[in-house]
Image 1 (cartoon, rainbow, N blue to C red):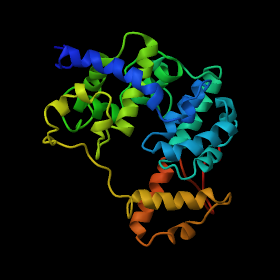
Image 2 (image 1 turned 90 degrees about the vertical axis):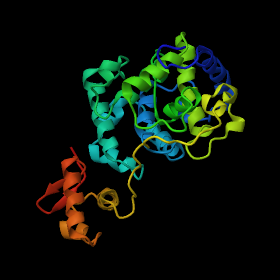
Image 3 (image 1 turned 60 degrees about the vertical axis):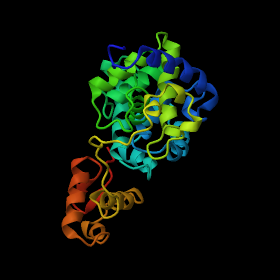
Length: 301
C-alpha cells in the first residue's frame, strides 16, 4: 500500500510513467507551452486561466505578451490600461493583481519572476496553485501542482471515487506528491499531463474512459464506475441576474471611455437600484472603480 494515499503501490507507480509517455503527443498546442516561453509568460497564462477556459485565454494571452513581453512593460502602464486590455476575460481583479505583481517584480525583483514558492506567494493574486505552477512549469522545479482536473483524475484513478469533493489542500498535495516522478523533468511533464487528462479525457460530465491511457489502472473503472454518493463541491451561482452581471455591465461602461461616468448614467444599466448600488460599492472596494466628483472611472494610477 502507498502510505500517503492508501492505494495499491502498483497503481501509484504505474500511472505516472504512462502519462509522461502519453503527454507529448496528446497535449493541446497551447502557446504558453511552446519552447522559449519566459517565466513571465507562464505567470500571465496562469493568471488568465484561473476560472477561465483556455480557448478564451489563448487570444488574450497572445495579445498581452505581444504588447507587454516583460513585467516592466506592463508596470509602465496604468492599472486602467491593464483592466481595459483584460476586456471580457472575467474576474477583472486579476488584471489589477497582475499589474501590481508586474510592478513588484520590476521594482523589487530586478524584473525577474521569482522562482521560490514562498516569494511567489507574496505576490498579489498568487495562491498555492499558481505559485507551484510557476515554479514547476516556468523553472522546472519538482513540486506537486494540483488543480481541479488533477483532483478529479486522482479521485477516480487512485481512490475509485467519481468526484473529488471539496478541495483539501494538504491531502490533495500529499496525493499528488505520492504520484510525482523523482526526476524534475518527468515531474514537470506529469504535472502537466494529469491536468491535461482531466481537461480533455477524464472530464467531469462525460469522461472518455475508452480513450484514457490509464483506464486499465483506474480504481474507479475497476469498481464499475460507481456514482458519487458523498458531498459535492459547491457550484458557482448563475451569472444571469447576479451581482457579477451587474459588475460586468458597470465595468464595460467604464472600460469604453476615459471620462468619468456619472452615477446616474451607470444606474440606468440595471433596474434594481439596491443591487446596482451593491455592485458599484463592491467595485470601488476592489479598486476597480474610482469615484470622482463628477463620476466614476477605472483606476488610472
